Length: 479
Length: 77
Image 1 (spheres, rainbow over the protein chains, first blue to last red):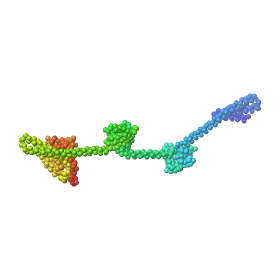
Image 2: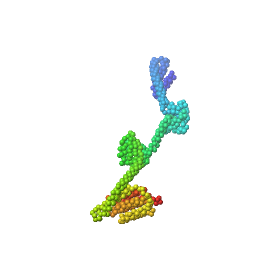
Image 3: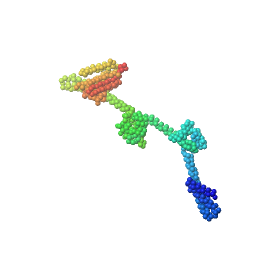
Image 4: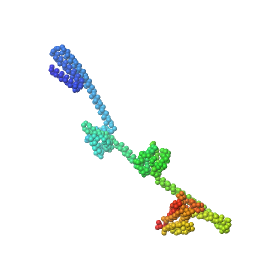
């Protein structure tokens, strides 16, 4: 009896505690149900003994109610258990799904995925990783990473793994060489990060074979170098300009130093129009507008002559500028020489003509002069024709002088050369001109030894001509 | 070189005339006073001897003519 009561009181207390501490209604209900049922049982025991109708009635009510509550709680509990079972099943499925997701991700990743422990032992590798190294996955897992890294690059990788394990994340990807199963060497690029796996520090990472990329990079670099050396060795300025209103310079080769006196870096981004000689700007613009390809000659701002050939491509002009200053100079010189030659040729032909004419005139002139002299001798000086004859004689003499000058002019050299003392010739010339020089003060400064090779009468002629000019110029000044 | 300098303080040669003085039949003298051949002939002779003629002139100041001829012997250099 007292035992049953004690149990009941304990169960009540337990259910209250459960209610407060577990806040689980169903546990409370189970206990209430069980309590009522057991109370009914107790009453039943008592009623057996006492045979009291009230006790028998309450026994039935208590047991019934207790059974019902217990059953309800039990049903509720079952529902909960079923739910929980379902929840566990769902969780299991979700887990499996997630695992599959991650497996699919890593197993099919285009990059090689790996996990290594602190000693560099491979814990996990994906198929791509195995493919990069040419091994089967089984051959790699459990193996030390350093076995498959090129000996020269092991130190770099080792220090990098150490840094990763320290948690450094700011490091760039590392590039190193690996050795494949077949012995071939490939370049790879690896990214890694530290993580904890099964309570141990590990490095997680991805890795990509970059051998082909490096090759193409190398090829691009080589092509660029080839382009640069080619362009820099061209004996002209290679350029690219925008076809905007300022002709902005986009590229210019190093030769700009020699032509413009400016480094390419000082020119790029600037207007090209400022480099053209202001007077030539208009012509250059006209030439460039002519067609897709053009050629134009102009002066640049520092006065050098250049020729520019270019082609218009979309919004650019590509071309080359060559310094033709020297060529221009030579051309000028040639033109000058040509003019001189033409002049000399003209002189020669004039000389020949003059010589021919002079000869032709000389004969009739002799007739005229001879007869004039005869008439002059025969006519009395007071004759009305005497003056006329004198005029004829004078005019004739003038013609004779002209003819003789013409003959001098046209006469070619060919006489014999002698060593002549220039001082003697000067003295002789001055003697000839004594009459003309009578009113002029002559200063002579003669050196002791001055001899030339030539014909005396020709040298004398030079001096006569020049001194006569001086005399004339001096007389002009006096009058 | 043997150098002959002939200088006068006559009327000089105008600047625009100077470039033409060696041209044949070029003269500024009145008709009858010059044939325009004097300097031309002189120039021709000097050139045929391998020499040169230089003219310095200031209008109104005078004229200086410098004739340079190759020496007969090297030791007269």
